[in-house]
Image (cartoon, rainbow, N blue to C red; front, side, top):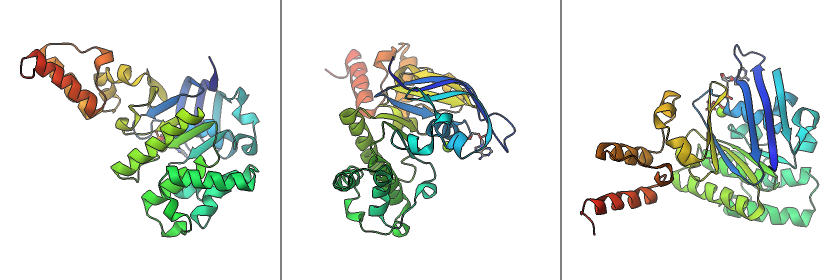
Length: 290
Ligand SMILES: Nc1ncnc2c1ncn2[C@@H]1O[C@H](COP(=O)(O)OP(=O)(O)OP(=O)(O)O)[C@@H](O)[C@H]1O
Ligand SMILES: [Mg+2]
């Protein structure tokens, strides 16, 4: 398997932490995949990303055990400068990552830092602003923007570096439903066209239905790992760790139960469109629809 990230027996406890934030985590992420990570508050999602992008151990101290490899190299042995062109992160706290006054400077900062040619930087700025739908904000001061607009800038600022591996920590928490959809479309497009590997952390599982794989963290451990339909089939066990499956999926599972017909994993609907098809099939079965 062609892995971009390998995590072996990773445990981490923050300096001020009482318990391990991550506990014996073993994971491998295939190049070109889109991976969703979910789990309740405090499950260790952001900590896991920090171990992949090098914030741990380079910027944050604690007790780290095990190994994290990116492109077959130990993160602890790479400098931040070496990691920068490979791993790009949109942090959960957008203000934490903003370094410039204007949108344009912020989106140019990453490519300038990794010594990209100026003409190419201009291209990248244009594309990053277009794909996050903020071309009109180019000359604005970041301090004058709304939370959602700042979040789009943070995403554009990472997209402009075209990393091999894109880490997004709750990237649409400040965005409205349309904004969320636009951002996810842009991210999936980059995955398809450039083969960029993407890891998206979101507490909203609806945001992760198109991922190749979903990982559920609970108390610093991997509780579930698999294709979205496979993971969502275990809705009762997911509820025990505090994760609700998409409402449409839950509705169809409940309906099948009521009808006494088990539903197969492959037929489990994840979106409203898929649920509509399932419902139409049931209505046909009962002679309500022809
Ligand atoms: N800087 C820190 N110092 C001490 N403990 C921390 C620190 N940051 C996080 N923790 C603890 O580590 C655990 C995992 O935190 P983490 O932020 O990774 O969770 P999360 O899944 O990202 O949660 P959320 O959904 O709220 O963002 C929690 O128990 C948290 O309290
Ligand atoms: Mg977090």
